[in-house]
Length: 227
Image (cartoon, rainbow, N blue to C red; front, side):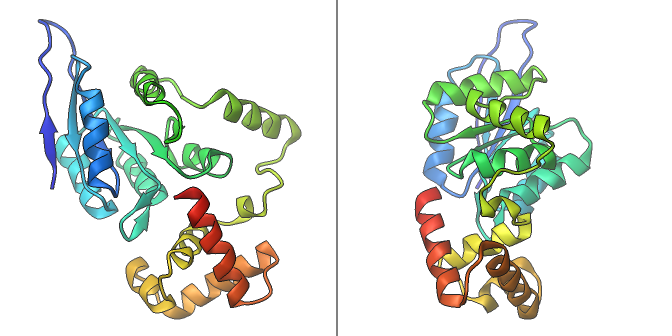
Protein backbone atom coordinates (compact mmCIF):
# COMPACT_ATOMS: atom_id res chain seq x y z
CA UNK A 1 0.00 0.00 0.00
CA UNK A 2 1.29 3.42 -0.88
CA UNK A 3 2.00 5.86 1.91
CA UNK A 4 3.20 9.42 1.92
CA UNK A 5 5.51 11.39 4.15
CA UNK A 6 5.21 15.10 3.54
CA UNK A 7 7.77 17.75 4.36
CA UNK A 8 7.09 21.43 4.90
CA UNK A 9 8.93 23.93 2.73
CA UNK A 10 9.72 27.58 3.03
CA UNK A 11 7.85 30.05 0.83
CA UNK A 12 8.95 29.85 -2.77
CA UNK A 13 10.99 26.66 -2.29
CA UNK A 14 10.28 23.91 -4.80
CA UNK A 15 8.87 20.64 -3.44
CA UNK A 16 10.22 17.57 -5.21
CA UNK A 17 8.26 14.30 -5.31
CA UNK A 18 10.19 11.06 -4.87
CA UNK A 19 8.57 7.61 -5.22
CA UNK A 20 10.30 4.52 -3.77
CA UNK A 21 9.72 1.17 -5.50
CA UNK A 22 11.20 -1.83 -3.69
CA UNK A 23 10.05 -5.36 -2.93
CA UNK A 24 10.80 -4.97 0.81
CA UNK A 25 8.41 -2.76 2.83
CA UNK A 26 11.02 -2.29 5.56
CA UNK A 27 13.50 -0.96 3.01
CA UNK A 28 10.93 1.42 1.54
CA UNK A 29 10.07 2.71 5.00
CA UNK A 30 13.72 3.10 6.02
CA UNK A 31 14.67 5.06 2.93
CA UNK A 32 11.55 7.23 3.24
CA UNK A 33 12.45 8.10 6.82
CA UNK A 34 15.93 9.08 5.71
CA UNK A 35 14.72 11.26 2.84
CA UNK A 36 12.00 13.01 4.84
CA UNK A 37 14.74 14.91 6.69
CA UNK A 38 15.13 16.90 3.48
CA UNK A 39 12.76 19.88 3.73
CA UNK A 40 12.13 20.15 -0.01
CA UNK A 41 11.29 16.50 -0.77
CA UNK A 42 7.94 14.76 -0.44
CA UNK A 43 8.34 10.98 -0.23
CA UNK A 44 5.89 8.33 -1.39
CA UNK A 45 6.35 4.70 -0.38
CA UNK A 46 5.33 2.95 -3.56
CA UNK A 47 4.62 -0.60 -4.64
CA UNK A 48 6.72 -3.75 -4.88
CA UNK A 49 5.77 -4.65 -8.46
CA UNK A 50 5.97 -3.12 -11.93
CA UNK A 51 2.27 -2.78 -12.79
CA UNK A 52 1.23 -1.01 -9.59
CA UNK A 53 4.35 1.14 -9.57
CA UNK A 54 3.70 2.30 -13.14
CA UNK A 55 0.15 3.33 -12.22
CA UNK A 56 1.54 5.27 -9.24
CA UNK A 57 3.99 7.05 -11.54
CA UNK A 58 1.14 8.04 -13.87
CA UNK A 59 -0.98 9.29 -10.96
CA UNK A 60 1.66 11.07 -8.88
CA UNK A 61 3.89 12.36 -11.68
CA UNK A 62 6.95 12.19 -9.38
CA UNK A 63 10.16 14.00 -10.19
CA UNK A 64 12.14 10.88 -9.34
CA UNK A 65 11.52 7.16 -8.83
CA UNK A 66 14.05 5.16 -6.80
CA UNK A 67 13.88 1.61 -8.20
CA UNK A 68 15.20 -1.71 -6.93
CA UNK A 69 16.25 -4.26 -9.52
CA UNK A 70 14.47 -7.13 -7.73
CA UNK A 71 10.71 -6.55 -7.72
CA UNK A 72 7.89 -8.94 -6.93
CA UNK A 73 7.28 -11.16 -9.94
CA UNK A 74 9.41 -9.06 -12.26
CA UNK A 75 12.58 -7.03 -12.72
CA UNK A 76 13.31 -3.36 -12.19
CA UNK A 77 14.70 -3.04 -15.71
CA UNK A 78 11.17 -3.46 -17.05
CA UNK A 79 9.91 -0.59 -14.92
CA UNK A 80 12.78 1.67 -16.01
CA UNK A 81 11.92 1.13 -19.67
CA UNK A 82 8.21 1.72 -19.13
CA UNK A 83 8.77 4.94 -17.18
CA UNK A 84 11.08 6.16 -19.93
CA UNK A 85 8.38 5.40 -22.50
CA UNK A 86 5.91 7.64 -20.65
CA UNK A 87 8.03 10.67 -21.63
CA UNK A 88 6.56 12.66 -18.71
CA UNK A 89 9.86 13.94 -17.34
CA UNK A 90 10.05 11.48 -14.42
CA UNK A 91 13.66 10.53 -13.71
CA UNK A 92 14.75 7.15 -12.34
CA UNK A 93 17.56 6.10 -10.02
CA UNK A 94 18.45 2.47 -9.26
CA UNK A 95 19.22 1.47 -5.67
CA UNK A 96 19.98 -2.24 -5.55
CA UNK A 97 22.12 -5.03 -4.14
CA UNK A 98 22.85 -6.28 -7.66
CA UNK A 99 26.43 -5.90 -8.89
CA UNK A 100 26.83 -2.51 -10.56
CA UNK A 101 29.46 -3.90 -12.92
CA UNK A 102 26.77 -5.90 -14.66
CA UNK A 103 23.66 -3.80 -14.11
CA UNK A 104 24.63 -0.12 -14.04
CA UNK A 105 25.23 0.16 -17.78
CA UNK A 106 22.05 -1.82 -18.52
CA UNK A 107 20.08 0.48 -16.24
CA UNK A 108 21.44 3.62 -17.91
CA UNK A 109 20.52 2.24 -21.33
CA UNK A 110 17.02 1.48 -20.02
CA UNK A 111 16.56 5.10 -18.98
CA UNK A 112 17.95 5.39 -15.43
CA UNK A 113 20.04 8.43 -14.53
CA UNK A 114 22.03 6.70 -11.83
CA UNK A 115 22.92 3.50 -10.01
CA UNK A 116 23.72 3.07 -6.31
CA UNK A 117 24.60 -0.20 -4.61
CA UNK A 118 22.77 -0.73 -1.31
CA UNK A 119 26.05 -1.63 0.35
CA UNK A 120 27.16 1.99 0.03
CA UNK A 121 26.71 4.34 3.04
CA UNK A 122 23.24 5.88 3.24
CA UNK A 123 24.54 9.37 2.57
CA UNK A 124 25.48 8.15 -0.93
CA UNK A 125 21.86 7.50 -1.91
CA UNK A 126 20.94 11.00 -0.73
CA UNK A 127 23.79 12.46 -2.77
CA UNK A 128 22.66 10.48 -5.80
CA UNK A 129 19.03 11.63 -5.39
CA UNK A 130 20.13 15.25 -5.28
CA UNK A 131 22.37 14.83 -8.31
CA UNK A 132 19.67 13.15 -10.40
CA UNK A 133 17.08 15.75 -9.38
CA UNK A 134 19.49 18.35 -10.79
CA UNK A 135 19.41 16.47 -14.08
CA UNK A 136 22.86 14.90 -13.67
CA UNK A 137 23.84 11.24 -13.96
CA UNK A 138 25.14 9.54 -10.80
CA UNK A 139 27.56 6.61 -10.91
CA UNK A 140 30.26 5.52 -8.48
CA UNK A 141 33.82 6.51 -9.36
CA UNK A 142 34.57 2.81 -9.90
CA UNK A 143 31.70 2.37 -12.35
CA UNK A 144 32.47 5.61 -14.15
CA UNK A 145 36.02 4.39 -14.82
CA UNK A 146 34.73 1.02 -16.03
CA UNK A 147 32.26 2.59 -18.46
CA UNK A 148 34.86 5.03 -19.78
CA UNK A 149 37.27 2.15 -20.36
CA UNK A 150 34.57 0.21 -22.21
CA UNK A 151 33.75 3.25 -24.31
CA UNK A 152 37.40 3.80 -25.15
CA UNK A 153 37.96 0.17 -26.14
CA UNK A 154 34.70 -0.14 -28.04
CA UNK A 155 33.49 -2.97 -25.79
CA UNK A 156 29.92 -2.85 -24.51
CA UNK A 157 30.52 -5.37 -21.72
CA UNK A 158 33.43 -6.63 -19.66
CA UNK A 159 34.81 -10.16 -19.45
CA UNK A 160 32.08 -11.42 -17.10
CA UNK A 161 29.97 -13.99 -19.02
CA UNK A 162 26.88 -12.84 -17.13
CA UNK A 163 27.22 -9.50 -18.86
CA UNK A 164 26.34 -11.23 -22.14
CA UNK A 165 22.87 -12.21 -20.90
CA UNK A 166 19.88 -10.19 -22.08
CA UNK A 167 17.62 -8.48 -19.55
CA UNK A 168 15.03 -11.25 -19.90
CA UNK A 169 17.70 -13.94 -19.51
CA UNK A 170 18.94 -12.23 -16.35
CA UNK A 171 15.38 -12.20 -15.07
CA UNK A 172 14.97 -15.93 -15.72
CA UNK A 173 18.40 -16.65 -14.23
CA UNK A 174 17.43 -14.81 -11.03
CA UNK A 175 14.14 -16.69 -10.75
CA UNK A 176 15.89 -20.04 -11.26
CA UNK A 177 18.24 -19.09 -8.43
CA UNK A 178 15.23 -18.35 -6.23
CA UNK A 179 13.94 -21.89 -6.74
CA UNK A 180 11.03 -20.91 -8.98
CA UNK A 181 9.94 -23.62 -11.42
CA UNK A 182 9.77 -23.17 -15.18
CA UNK A 183 5.96 -23.14 -15.17
CA UNK A 184 5.89 -20.59 -12.34
CA UNK A 185 8.41 -18.39 -14.17
CA UNK A 186 6.29 -18.58 -17.32
CA UNK A 187 3.17 -17.61 -15.40
CA UNK A 188 4.88 -14.66 -13.69
CA UNK A 189 6.39 -13.39 -16.94
CA UNK A 190 3.23 -13.99 -18.97
CA UNK A 191 4.92 -16.29 -21.48
CA UNK A 192 4.76 -19.98 -22.43
CA UNK A 193 6.91 -22.57 -20.59
CA UNK A 194 8.62 -23.32 -23.91
CA UNK A 195 9.81 -19.71 -24.03
CA UNK A 196 11.32 -20.04 -20.56
CA UNK A 197 12.98 -23.32 -21.59
CA UNK A 198 14.48 -21.52 -24.58
CA UNK A 199 15.79 -18.80 -22.27
CA UNK A 200 17.32 -21.45 -20.02
CA UNK A 201 19.09 -23.06 -22.98
CA UNK A 202 20.50 -19.70 -24.11
CA UNK A 203 21.73 -19.00 -20.57
CA UNK A 204 23.46 -22.37 -20.36
CA UNK A 205 25.12 -21.79 -23.71
CA UNK A 206 26.34 -18.28 -22.87
CA UNK A 207 27.63 -19.29 -19.43
CA UNK A 208 29.16 -22.57 -20.57
CA UNK A 209 26.94 -24.67 -18.30
CA UNK A 210 26.46 -28.33 -19.23
CA UNK A 211 23.07 -29.15 -17.77
CA UNK A 212 20.13 -27.99 -15.65
CA UNK A 213 21.88 -28.89 -12.41
CA UNK A 214 24.85 -26.63 -13.21
CA UNK A 215 22.45 -23.86 -14.21
CA UNK A 216 20.61 -24.14 -10.90
CA UNK A 217 23.82 -24.16 -8.83
CA UNK A 218 25.19 -21.15 -10.68
CA UNK A 219 21.90 -19.24 -10.37
CA UNK A 220 21.52 -20.01 -6.66
CA UNK A 221 25.08 -18.88 -5.96
CA UNK A 222 24.49 -15.64 -7.89
CA UNK A 223 21.27 -14.91 -5.99
CA UNK A 224 23.00 -15.54 -2.66
CA UNK A 225 25.80 -13.17 -3.61
CA UNK A 226 23.59 -10.45 -5.05
CA UNK A 227 20.49 -10.56 -2.87
